Amino acid sequence: MEGGGAAASSAAASVPRVVVFDLDGCVWYPEMYMLWGGGAPFKAQSNGDLTDNAGQKCYLMGAVREIMHTLKTDSAWGQSHHHHRPASQRSRT
Image (cartoon, rainbow, N blue to C red; front, side, top):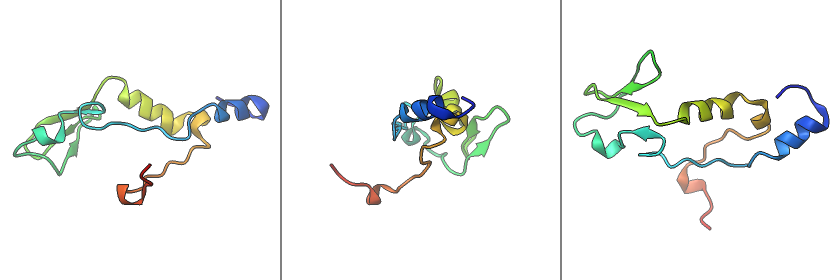
């Protein structure tokens, strides 16, 4: 979205304040517990996937890569806060 004015303000107001992703098995595969004998450190491949230290491929599932790219680059999300708070600092409701 480019430009300004009411249209940009309306678009920015229509996006949620928070987006939550369930990670293992929803954002990436395999789930981390499945990386027996592997795991960190991970190495990035030219296609954006990762391999763990045992050489097992780890990748983003479905449209996750595109969704995260949109969250990072689309101006509608420009007013969002791109913060990560550790679980110990989040309120429990």
